[in-house]
Structures are given as C-alpha cells and as structure tokens.
Length: 411
Image (cartoon, rainbow, N blue to C red; front, side, top):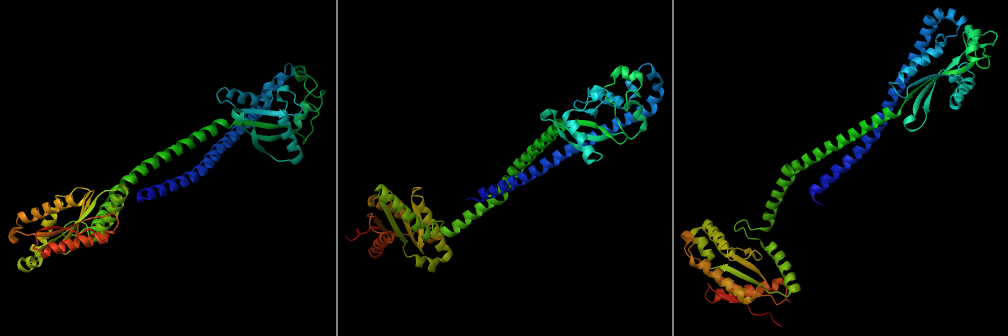
C-alpha cells in the first residue's frame, strides 16, 4: 500500500469519524436549540394572553359592566378578549393559538376537547402549575403549554354559581345549561397556548444540512490541498531520494552501469522469459587489456576516465532491453535478450572495434578482450557466466583484443 493511499485512508477515516461525531452532536444541539426557541415563544404567547386578560379585567370590564345589564358584552370577559387577540395573530403567525379550555364552559367554543380534558384531569388529580408537551403529527405538530384555571376569586361565582345568580343578559346569549356549578378552589379548565414546531425543526434541519455540506466542502478542499502538499513536500522528495538510493544500491557509481547484484536479478528474469518463450539468450564478458599498466603509468584518475568512456562506448551499442554491468575492476558483462551466439559475437566485435579505434585522451588507444556464451536453457546463470569468462581468458591468452566464443556446456 502506497504512502499516498495510506495517508488518504487515514484522512478519510478521521473525517468520517469526525463527521459522524459532529453530525450526532449538532443534530441534537440544533434540534434542542429550535425547541428552546419554541418554548420561549410559547412562554411569550402565554404571557401575552395573561397580559390581555389582566388589562381587560382591570381597565375594560369596569367601564363596560354597566352595559351588561341590558346587553351582554363578551368583550368584558377576560378569557374572551385574550382568545380573540391571539386569534388575530394567527393570520400572520400560522399555528400559534391560545385557548381557555373548560370542562363546562359558558361559551361553547371554549369546551375542552378530549386531550385537553385529560390535561385538566391531570391538574385536578396531581396538582401543579404548568404542563408542557407535544400534540399532533407532521406539519400540525405543536408544543403546548397548559396552566390550570382555578376559581380563586369569589366574584367569578356571580356568573357561574347558579343560573339564578347570573346576569339575565348573559343567560339570554348563552342560556342556563352551561357554565354553572363552579366552586371556589375548583380547577375548571386550562389556559392553553400552542406553538408550531414543524417549521423551527425544519429550519434546524436545513441548518444542519448546510453545516454538513460546508464540512464536506472544507474537507474536500483540505483533502486536495494536503495531497498537493504531500506530493510536493513528501512523496516527490521521497521518490527522488528513493531513486537515488536505488541507484546507489544497484548501480556502479563510476560507470553508471548496474552492479553485479542487479545484473544477476536481471539475468534470472531474462532466463525465465527465455525459457517460457523459447528465446535465445547470450552474455558477453569483456575485460580491458593491460589496465593495471594504465593505472600505474597515468594514474587512477586516468584509469577511471578509461573505465567510464569504455562503458559509454559499449552502452551505445545496446538495445533498451539489454543490460550492461560492471562485474568488477576493469571487467564488464553484457546481458543480451533474444540473442543467439552469432548475433552476440557480432555485437562483441562491434564493441571491441569501438573501444580500440578511438584513443582515450592522453592514455591513447585501449583494447579489450571478449568472451561470448549462449544459454542452453538448462544450465544456471553462474554456469553460463563461467563459460563466458573462460572464453575471455582464452582471448587474453591468445593475443588479446579479440572475441572468443565459449565452448558449449558439457552434455
């Protein structure tokens, strides 16, 4: 697995884990934040209704009560005024509602529904000053706040104790069947406000999606930037360093040919290919003649110059599929793929002429001896190299500056 793949894998895993954690946290946080706003709105709506109720009771009812003798005015009832004011707000704020739900109301529109009646019974049985919860489904889902309506003012009994005690004008409007029998201390209903939760929660969801999208965009930009930085500051320099280390490990520093270890790796690969495809394969061993004399006469720097230039001249004759290596000292070996011994000997002859024909600076002309061997598809690589080396030795012994073919391997 490459460094880039490992780095990106770790980066993606960290992002996924971080995103999941952030998604869980912010989803809950935004939902709770939206519900807190809804709760605050419900409290504001309840406070508004109570304020209207108090204003009607303190400032409106005393002035209009004398008129109730002839004609009953619902506007003098605090609950009626609070309900009407909030209902006018619904034209602009859809879903916001206020109701004074009563088990046995004077005004039929205030009659408690089944679920409102259950809340009233809860206050009667368990007490308490406020109950909150959710009601409805989907877009109609609301958060409600309910407070008990308890008869604490004896003046209320003037209208709600018995029909005989109620104002005739009220009886004329609502009749004598409902809204009576109230007693001090009784919980007769609830003040109920409802605030929609669908839109705040939907807004919270949209905010959540926007946040996650921005997180994804930031990660994508960061991902690209870090990969560019990784390529520029890590992978690129490391690749160049690795190539240099590879060269140091596999190439001869003086001639820039591959070293002995890499040559045998190449030889094994070439032998496998030749065996499978039934191709020819040859090696050429060459050694510079009287090289010690060059070092002793002209110095090692001149000797190094001869080695480098001889390697360059030989390499110019090779194909890209061939391989040239410095075998040791002034000795070189060539690996020739898909080459039979005749072609290998011809190439060795061309290399011999290329070395011998042009002088090497102050050193003058230099010659080389060659040994050529063809693989028989049976012997190992070392055996073939040994045969080529023996042929090279024969070239040395018989006059140098010549090419000698190796004897076939023994049957």
